[in-house]
Image: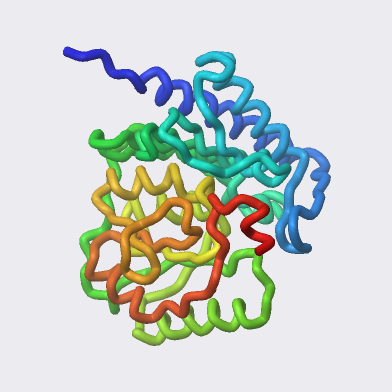
Length: 286
């Protein structure tokens, strides 16, 4: 039997995610110092930066300097490229739900994914304030605290709960489209609309069957990479908001328990532009 090349990486991701969660919990009990990343609603704390350094440092120590590539939210914010190559690559959101963290809203997650040849191999999401460890490997199922999880079997959109977010874009036209979409979906009607404030947690809620679907435009690859593996391995699917194939770098996604629910939601989404994650700064200026 061939040796599993990525089991040690998977095991390390779980261990590192739990350690990062401990740091976040401890930081939440102390004074939180906040800076503004790109707008007054796009926040970054010293904890985000420290936790990302802890995660990347631990992975480099385990696997060697230069052995793997890294896409980290805070590293990209400081100018590092967000390009997914065929090389083994870690995709990291150290604190998904920073605004929640700052306000003490109890949904904050560590999200760690691993891709090889541009294909996601595994994902780990640790909802650290709930102490829930979600994890999945490609082809091996999805779990929460070591118990198998599965998407809901609801196919009637009228019996569904849909989860989404407002994001950090405060352009009036964008906000109008976001609320218009939510109004259209609510009036299908569905049982309800929800939002936890963290994309990674939202995807895990799809995976556990707590909600039928999650959609958003404006998220980033580090928000959803780990959750994407977990949703798929729990029996769900991922699509673009226009009904096309899921593209990790597109900053737009629908994750759902089945295609019936996904297709119905897609009919109501008012799409707006979001610059791809893999567009380099020079291209963004054009």
